[in-house]
Length: 250
Image 1: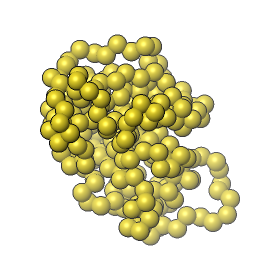
Image 2: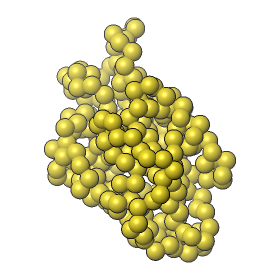
Image 3: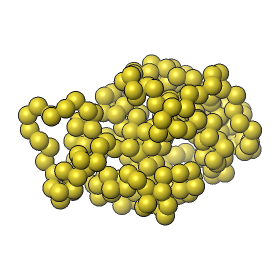
């Protein structure tokens, strides 16, 4: 996976890293174009931003978890980052969740914006049971090997305070008219109210940008002033990636 670092300060590396995972139709530099990086700088947060070229082909060949670990997280930890958050949009949010499912304990927080959470029939089963808190995962072998059969039972842990405290904090944002909103609401009902953010609109950048700015105001991220670092003015130029991102499917 190719990456491009946008530091919070030109003077030193921060101890905190935000790893941005794009949706399938999106290019990683769009996080900068749509104001995600500038929003971090406007708040003088001591968090570097790493834009990751993680297109949908990694999900198709089921190599996403391995590549994110080997190409991104492990090298960044080796560089000295003490705190790493995953920030994913759509299938990027799905990727952040399945990585934690497969490799628990390697990140310190997860932000999902309009995440893909699996197939609608599985969500319908949970809704019929009365929601994620009341749902009981079927016993015995699952009817298929799709990852959402494992993802929903794992997400259910966030509904229990005792198990949730051992998981990285999870923040959810989505548009009320999003095509995945039914599944989003199932997850939202299992999370603390302060970690769920909604807005009008559907599955697109204007909604995600609004949500990101709201969420940044409450995320437990350090400020440059608190760490003694100097801020870097916002830039609008698009980053130069080492490879052209592949846009395949949403």
